[in-house]
Length: 78
Image (cartoon, one colour):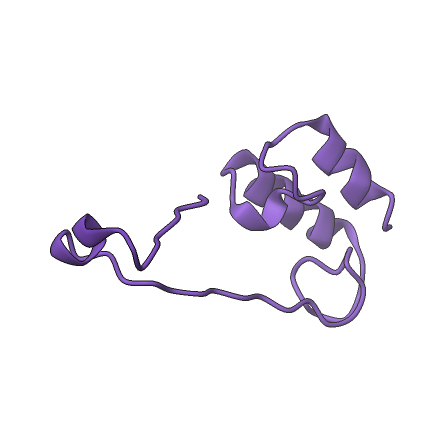
């Protein structure tokens, strides 16, 4: 990620690229990673697993890189 598509790109339609928009909304505590309404060690482990897999959700500070700053930002919300 990210992948960009513009309507002016003639090859986009030929190659089968369609414009899409994906949005995720976090309701509640940002540290509640598994969404069970409690913040515990299982949330930390789930975050670290997503971070290790380089899931876009684990880019906690939104800088498009996976580094120690994502982990520190997440831990700051505990």
